[in-house]
Length: 337
Image 1 (tube, rainbow, N blue to C red):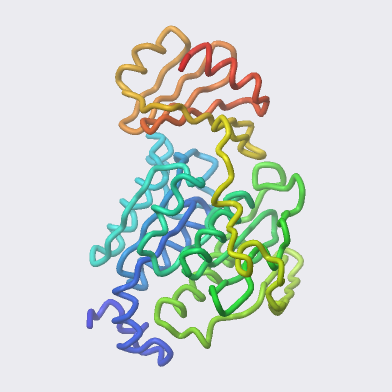
Image 2 (cartoon, helix red, strand yellow):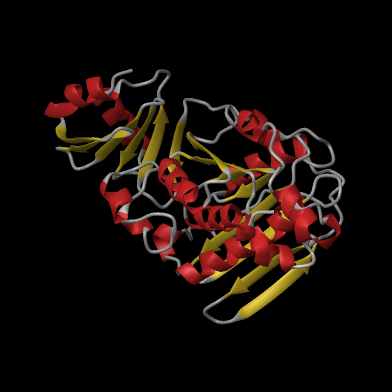
């Protein structure tokens, strides 16, 4: 067994058998921001054999305070988070496989992403995506670990299909504190590390098949005020659309016109029904404002004050507004698809 894992192997609950199991397992981490980078870092160093990371965003300077796999150069290059994370994780552990997906995780893409996975970890910042992950995980009988962090507060819970209730049972139609996001009330990085460490610890139990050791509770804490609360799981709700009725409603939500407001970020995402040739579009948009092209995206500082961020896969972020009508106007004006 590789000596790099010797201290982990000495931990009797893992041992050589657990380490060997860990090296064969596949993990999907959705969202490689604050929580996702910490979870990915722990699992890469622990020797999880295959880590798939999926994220639609790119690195910005404001991420560096808490998103531990990124540096100033990543932000300067506006590198996609999945790409930057893969580079760091591969440098940390060349024994493992890191599969980076620069993509929007939605009802059209999620089932492809979870295929073949042994575990799904939530690194997202919104309940719409979390309930989508919950549905996909329970449909395909894959363990799912939820986590959230905002301000000085954090929470996490592991869910095992067939053994525990699901996220929908626990939270109903699930709302976090209304209006509170990292962009509106902030977040301190030790909270992020704690939540993701709770997630990673449960992940290692699951991946080494120590299912009887997996926590069956929701942990909540306020680190600044040093308050902790653990709530044991209730029985699954008999009318739960996910784990009891197996209807998985979030998997079949219509994408509508593919427009999403990114809460708290003054950003509207629009998914075009095409892909973009970045070189061609960088040239087309030079008269619209200041253009910066990277191998992964185009950023256009519009004369009107907003910003367009255009990805090769057809996504366009209209930054500087949460007004969908305004975003549609700008999209129509400059993209016109």
